[in-house]
Image 1 (cartoon, helix red, strand yellow):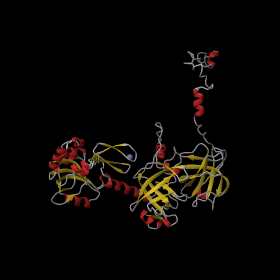
Image 2 (cartoon, helix red, strand yellow):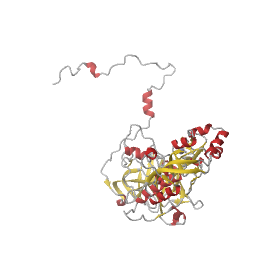
Image 3 (spheres, protein in one colour):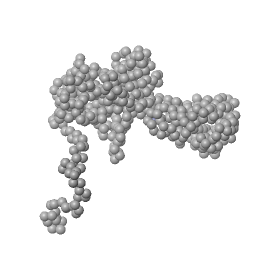
Image 4 (cartoon, protein in one colour):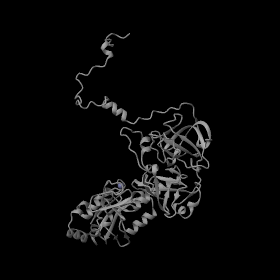
Length: 508
Ligand SMILES: [Zn+2]
């Protein structure tokens, strides 16, 4: 029994309190409005969020290979491995605004899904994990309704038909499901897989030829007007393997696939964040089965409606290619950041063992123990200084963004790809060749730390920008044929310094 103190039984308790003051600022008499409050208008204008969907009956879970044509309530899961915008025709249902044709695959097979929409198009990307519920599977053999490699299809119009549904797994995609290519057997080579070079040398005529490439760079997204005045989107990726390089053109709805989407700030779910991430240059690996290849431009790849694309497939070859790409990038980088925490300057300077190497010995050590990390001293003669030349060519400072080199006589530059400001560092090549009695080190093969630059130049690298012509000439002459001692570190791990000699400090 509750005491009378806990319950306010008075009649006032049933009515919300009346506002103390009258509503602020009455609208002017001539603007009587339409009788709706601003709040009501706001609610009416907001697009209706799709209501959560619940299956209206029992759907049988199925692997894609077990789908059969005919009426049956089934549900299956897979990744989007192709996406084609279907042009509206006079036959298009008048209530639909458009249709996308998806190819969805799991590890057992692939099938076509035709998704009609009126208002709401899910943010579908190549590689997205989706679940489908449908009550009918059709056989599109010998037709254009499905892809040649996936003749069975499901036709969905979730906004009109509550018995079918497509769910995009954005908050529950841990990146691990359905990542194996079709026909993959552990320990066996993937059928039809060839190098990019072999593909261009005739392999493109082999049906279902497969190539495995890593994204080298992602170009800007463009809007392109076609001959018939319609507008479409396009993004060009540079892709490569260890034999060749090509452009992969993505058109229409697929052009959004490489680009990341913002994640709301309070979403800390790592799976949601990963699912919204874009493709990464140097890391994202694509397995293309039956890509289109423009014959007149042998290095231009496209997706045809029969292509199957696996994004970051879970196969050993993809892991190998990603590692190769990381090594390649640091080897080709024009101005790598100095590796932090790999070498210890204090030990070189004051440790009990201080090793003076010749360049030839360093080379010998590096070859004899390719995985070793070691450090010591090198006494070298600077035989080339390019300060004046690099200043004239506006290349004193350099950096890289979007896989494009950036040069300027400035500490920052704007990337032509993403239009972001990039911080530049002194170009390593302003010091050309150095040598000792045993060998030479070519331009760009030394990687200087900020401290090493200060010691060598006698000023912060930024100070180079303030030097007049005479002062620059003086500095350049002073460095040329100067004998200096380099406190260096070497690591056999090419992903760290790309096979360059890391200079931690310079002394006379
Ligand atoms: Zn950029």
